[in-house]
Amino acid sequence: MGHHTGDAGGRDPGATTTVILDSIRRIVRMLRVASRAAEKDLGLSAAQLFVLHSLAKGPAASLNEVAERTRTHQSSVSVVVQRLVERGLVARDIDPGDARRRGLSLTPAAWPLLRDSPDAPSERLIAAMERMPTTTRKRLAADLARLVHELGADDEPASMLFEEDPEGSVTKKPGRNSNRRA
Image (cartoon, helix red, strand yellow):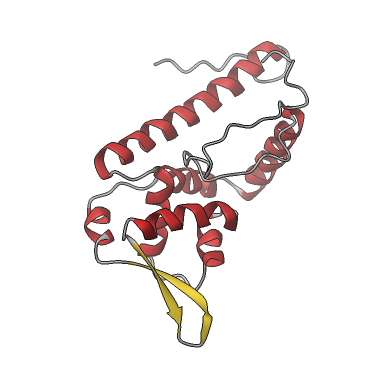
């Protein structure tokens, strides 16, 4: 597969847009292929594998701690954790210091799945971003936030990658610029 770069220097906006789209396509494809492999090999979604890997590093004192580790909103990680609890792979442990709090840990059934599992796709993405210089990451963050805004997707939930929405819903409202051609 060739690497099309075009003129990303600004003289040809069409070529620059192509480079951006090709980059997004490659990232999404890599994530999708890795997600399908996790589903096929382990019977887990990529998001579930990501949470299990996070908990393999040590129990979490709370759902918020898992959200911090996975750099995901608490409401999104909550759905994934609940599915893992239902499958018997994660346990909710009562905090000895505060009976109202529930810590999270892997059950013995989770360890064999993790033994030979690859990194979760999100882990690969995070590691790649963290290898980038801080200034590059900050610029990328600002540019992607601007793209999200231009798409009219500011209010869309930022769910864990390749995890079904709890109700299996599809976004009901089109983005504010949905009539623009990409």
